[in-house]
Length: 274
Image (cartoon, rainbow, N blue to C red; front, side, top):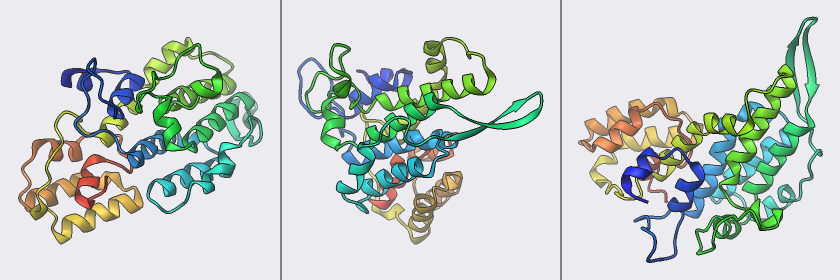
């Protein structure tokens, strides 16, 4: 992959496979700083939060939140075990749709099945997420592999979430929103942007000047992280400028449209997280 491809590609799977790669291979260009275990799991969590309205069931939300706590060292791997054992159809979600008679509630087993798949994925050990993506030198997911191996690849998260959304639209309207492959391509954009938000530019890691970590800057970044208040990133950009930061990538990222999530490369730099 080239730096230009990193900025222009719209394929989540392709970008993620590069971002996590940790094994030297003469055939490939490696990222200068691969995505850390923490950032990889926070990326999966952030993908789920992009479609948070689908996660009506509190147990499914709890699974996502537990994975987030695990990423930051506030849970242990055994806390994820029960979520890895979830069964399809075990946690039905209730949705609302409009009918000629008014609003009515409905459940969709197909939506729930894909959400359970997403939750089981982000509850997997990091070694599995990396190995089956190719990040530990494995070949990455292959159609000939048994499903239990294919489904451990971290990039499957977008497949699961876009399919859940597709099925929800079908259940609510009774109509297909185009073909599912077309729908996935249309839906993939925010996930790609989120990946870049967390990974930054793997070709050009930013050296953060400690002098920029003023009390105001650190306080703002801490609040943004704790409260997921990413609408305050432009304020953080202003504070960084006042502290002497003139790095165009940092300032433009804070003032960009997002989406953003925990693991955002700028907030992590300010807080010293990897």
